[in-house]
Image (cartoon, rainbow, N blue to C red):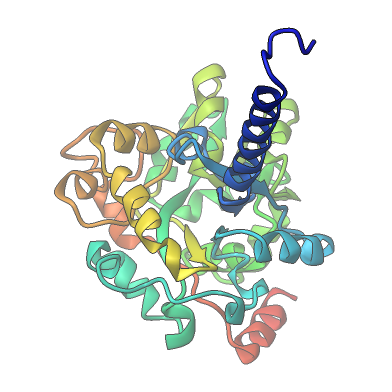
Amino acid sequence: MFSKFKTRREFLNCGKLSVLFLVNSCSNLTNKVRIALQNSFYPQSFKDTFPKDWKQEKIIFERVQSQKNRNIILNSDFTLINDGWISTINFAEFEKINQYPLIENLDKRSTNFLASFNENKRSKIYPIGIVPYTIIIKNNKELINSARISWDFLLSKKLTGKIIFPQSPRIILSIAKKINSSNSLKKLKSQAMLFDDKNMLNWLINSDACVAIVPYSLCSKYLKIDPRLSLVFPRQGVPLMWHFILSRSNLNNEILIKWIKSLENKSIVDKLVSQGWYLPFKSDYLQSKYNSEIYPISGPSKKCWDNSWSFPVLTNEQKINLENSWN
């Protein structure tokens, strides 16, 4: 194997170059930008926007996974998280991110929602996506018109025991407040077939269930392959799920800004919206996606967006009141 080297020196020099190449390759792997996220929360069109040299670290937001998640997050540059789990992280472990020029890029809906957080949290979270909840109706075309108007249709006797709700008392309570009926929460709970966040669409397709309330970004692919399913956004508004990005190092802000600006490419915006993901930035083209009367899409109408609601972090007292109301 040494015959191709004329001298011992050539052989040694080649060996040195191989070692340098190996060290450099390992260094590049170490220096890769790492972003922690729960894959199931994000449409493929969004994950496709990550630069190719970013390494995706998978986390699962469940109580039993908290320590494992924390270890992954501590070794990642960025973390993606939705508002339902934001209270589970330690903000002391993150750097300030919500500063100029990033803050200048946000629309009014985002800045209003950020104002509901205390200053420490507000400075460390950056809105990167809004996902509206939607109503999926199976094989019940006669329900569609009433569902488009308000949430009252959920109390229909035809739907008793045939609704799949999110496994979130806070979301269900917020919907109950929109229903024009006394004891609306009790009546709404009696309509439930089950409460589920992971397999709600499988249950809807493969059971006697007629209605499911799900994040829009999780159902777009099912709508394309199952003609029995209809998508509805009530004009009364829908709950909104917010997604944020947090940074472990302010040295990476330039990298982050470059990626965020790349999301505003029109073809990327169109792909994201087609999969139920809305960017919370103030460019005219992005804002046009919140108005389906002007640009016909299958998402919420402007009226629905205007009436939709978000969920700020709860205080301890609010958590107790929520549990009491639910029970």
